[in-house]
Amino acid sequence: MPASTTGRARPAGSARCRRLSWRAFGSLAATLALTLAGGATGVTTASATDLREVMFVGNNWDGTATVIKSSGDFAKIGQINVIPDKAQRLAEINADPIKWIYYTAINNQVGQGHDQFVDDMYSTPDGKSVVVSRPSFADVVSIDLATDKINWRFPVAGYRADHMAVSPDGTRVAVSASTANLVQVLDINTGKELGEFPTGDKPHENFFTNGGKYIWNMSIGEVTTSLDDPSADWTKGDRHITVIDATTFKQVKIIDMRDRLDAIGLKDFSDAVRPAAFTPDWSKLYFQVSFFNGFLEYDVAADKITRVKTLPANPATSTDRTTWLLDSRHHGISMNPDGTKLCVAGTMDNYATVVDRATLQEGPLIPASTPYWATVSGDGKDCVISEAGADQITAIDFATGEKVTSVAVGDHPQRVRLGHVPAGWTGPTSS
Image 1 (cartoon, rainbow, N blue to C red):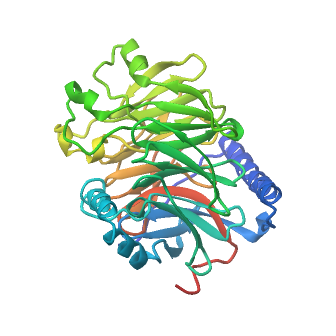
Image 2: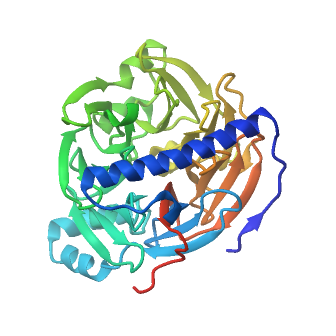
């Protein structure tokens, strides 16, 4: 699928100044992270000038990661094979009846008849490797960007690996072991497990918050059954947010959105917290829940839901909840660097839109084919969504709400993450 581009004008004045400040801050943060990472691990890391900021796009069904520019035209730079050990992993699975049952179930249910080869990914502080969670293989691997060879492999507890998060200093990565109801935290350079903590049923998204002091995990419960009517919500399992101390891995707080939803009369809403976004000061959380075309605002200090935003429903979207992808309605939300705009992926409604955080007024509805994730470009100007149904990413201007460009990637893109590669890198030299 060829890439297509559209031009747009950029606003001037104070917005431009803020963006230049964000870029400068990002450069400083990258340099600081590299310095801290080298000091913490004893590994000599590259300087910021030796690295290039990029975006990794995980192509879940074909087992690759497309590497693109982190801003501007988002042009393709290279591609990584994240399953170089596919034959070995499949042989192990076929030799173990229990592993084979889970592998087949993942393919038939979550994968919609496809293998799930890449869920999440982050680069190492030195920019030489990318760390990938692989649901179908129930593991996390570090892959050398120069050779496409595996540096280390960590089999997660249970039978499926899911969302990850990286610590602010880049040295630790937290992965959801979804069938074991655990989050496991690894040294990003060695793959050694540093600690773990229990969660609700089917842990999903993770965040390092408050400068890396805490880890938040959202569990979403069972999303593969057809028991999707609100009356059957109790069958979905124990869903809550787990907050833990990122140093001791001890539980700090449990937040059950069921109570908070009931308190404002939303008794028929699911309490499965899907993708979410924090304000820059961590004071507010904006989150999506299963089956809802919109999002909610949660005040962290007050411990209550303060606003609810319902976004437009696509008239062409079926009202039969059992036809919606893994209990999703909208799946993907991000916030611009100064915390003034949200970008929402309307997965089942086939659009994305930018929302003003003060007024909660949405902008233009940008048509998209099963948009499944939303993140922020390296320069902070654009929201970048993955279009799983069109095998492309699309950038949307936070300032105008209009489409910037679309770029073709691999089969069924989902997670999109900022990272770094060595300057001049265009792909592995061997496979």
